[in-house]
Length: 289
Image (cartoon, rainbow, N blue to C red; front, top):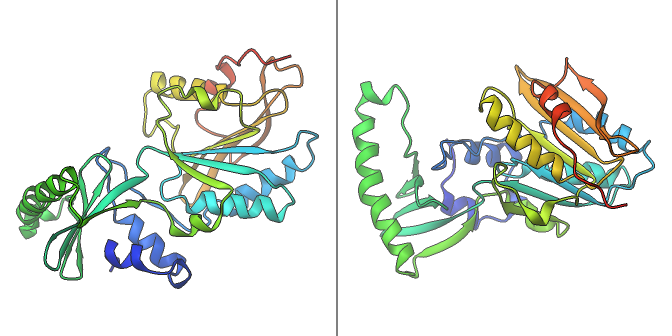
């Protein structure tokens, strides 16, 4: 059973096992219908293969962007692996939902809200209760129970947050262990909206388990990839598109050509990313000369 948000956020990060952290985030479903699903260091083999290529490049890796990080545990692992390889980069991780509020609704009862105000966990006297529905809930009667909890506890929690009540505490919906890495920053960001502060900034951009046809249409993918490519710092910068399928990673590692005119495929893993062709079509920025 997952731990409650109150217990999770109150604990010393050193006292929480990676499996406990994974279990906690895997039960959180945000208002944009995505889960904070995570698995500790699940990209270890892919990270190692990419870093081996980065170390052969003449371009220094100073700024890294990790898009769609969920709880940020894989961002933490990437940062640590870069450091182990002698690459002292600053890492920015982004996700659409990185903050929320833990609200004391009644004595012994708390509700965790995401940044959209949706309940993502109820805590009934130390028992975690998920607000979202599963198919089986229709047959067990839990659908009605969850609906009632969401309406009553969720509604009261939102009112308390709006009123600035003392029992409503802001929390970060990312791994508490990230606070121990001052060179890692997690920011709220939407890949489908251009971010001027990111343009032509990053030496390495990783997009894992986000830009693929299982989630988005071709036009949406084209838009998200165009924004992603615009964040590359210039000739020699790297882009990794990856997806985990049946416990293996299908991915493509691109590199901006030395003349800055195109993306080149540096390596493919298990056949390459599904959206590889869209990345090759994406317009590149006008690099500063």
